[in-house]
Each structure stands twice: as structure tokens, then as C-alpha cells.
Length: 171
Image 1 (tube, rainbow, N blue to C red):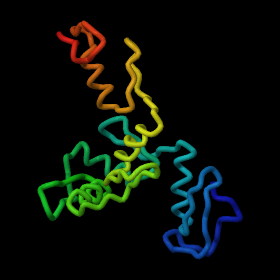
Image 2 (image 1 turned 180 degrees about the horizontal axis):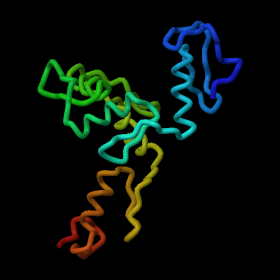
Image 3 (image 1 turned 90 degrees about the vertical axis):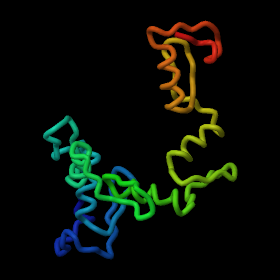
Image 4 (image 1 turned 180 degrees about the vertical axis):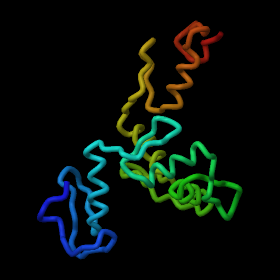
């Protein structure tokens, strides 16, 4: 919520200020008062922008515009080095690291580095030993969603477990 100490009456909504506007609920800060007002919707849960084609709703109109591309299949962001195309700029920038070889995400424990933050998060599970995905049927645990889903497919009805090893499972 904007407080009196953060609000500048003469400030134009899109104009950068020397003043720093901070969120009272999290570490977010900005030089733009309209960015703070927009950010505050994430805490209030207010999502006034609703997709007419599905249940998606967002606090930000730009997110709804980006989401709409899921329905239209529009992919306006194109890689100039290959045939890759996508619906949002962040995905294109992430993809371009494949060509550049840039690996900005580095492990603090070992020498591992990668080009996507999600890969680093997955890697860190090796150091922590955390296995957040657990099968309710047999107690199998893993740190990786794809392994969990593979396990679920093998243990779903219609499959029979013969032994302790996944190699021993058959239909």
C-alpha cells in the first residue's frame, strides 16, 4: 500500500524519481511510484484482469496480454540464430544463452554453472539432499519433478510392481 511518506504528489506516474519507493510487505523497491502501486496488487491478491477463454487472472494487464498468446499461438519473439520462437521476451533471452554459451547462474558450493535459474535450483538439491517429491503409494522420493512423473506413470493402475528397482516394474 502507498503510504504518505512514499507518495510524491508532483510525481508523474511514469516518471523516474530520485526517491526510492519501497514495499512495506517485501524487499521490492523502485524509483517509479506507479511500479510500486502495481506491485502492491501482488500482496492484496487483487486480479482484475481475467482471461475470457479460461480461468487465468492477473494483477497486471501485461501478464494477461502475454497469457493470451497461449490461446492464439502467437510467437512474436524470434531467435535470429535459429528457428526458435516464443510468446514472451524473457523466454527468448533465456534461449539466446544456448547460442552465447553464457552461464550466469553459479553454484556457491561447487564449480557448477548453468544458463537457467531452474537448473541451478535443481542442482542445489544435490548439496542439500532435499527430495520434495514423494509418492503417496510407496514412499518413493526424488528431488526432480520429471523423475516423480516418470515414477507415477510406472506405478499408475495397469502397472504392477515386481521388485524394489524401477527396472523390475512391468505392465
